View (cartoon, one colour):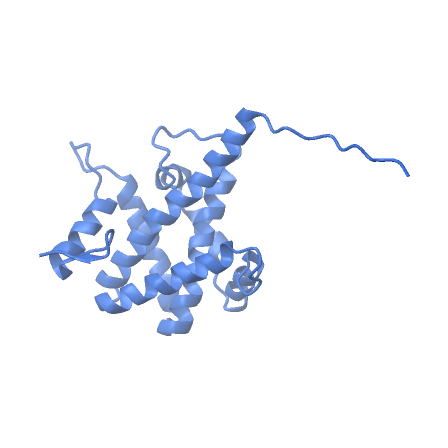
Length: 197
């Protein structure tokens, strides 16, 4: 018998930092999309605050299952297959969003991203929609027409995040504006999860 010696592979710090930055892009998009989904369902689909909160909880649980490698119930493949079976083209929707807006949603304000980040950004945008559609269809009985309307509103709101008001540095819509809307309308802070007087 002889021993086998394995060489350790060291990942260069710069590569590690790039990969970490790519992961952060997905979290940035998911966070902004959470605000957008909540506002749209409340404003455009007349869901009650309780329904919106329930929707958000179900989607977060679904995301946790998806991120858990041991949980094979929710995988990227199963989510894509679900949408294909229901004839919902998420990839076409993602491609319809201009890259400048995708970069903005990933919190890349200078318009430049690390090499290969565009794929990560598109993947993150698609994932948020893949996680959301089954909840809307199964728990809230959204038809394909309503899903399409929802996706169109999401594209509109993404544009509102990206677009600045004329003669102003302020954007038409931000996380903070949505948060304040719920504080005013429902006396509830969606960030802290607490009632506000």
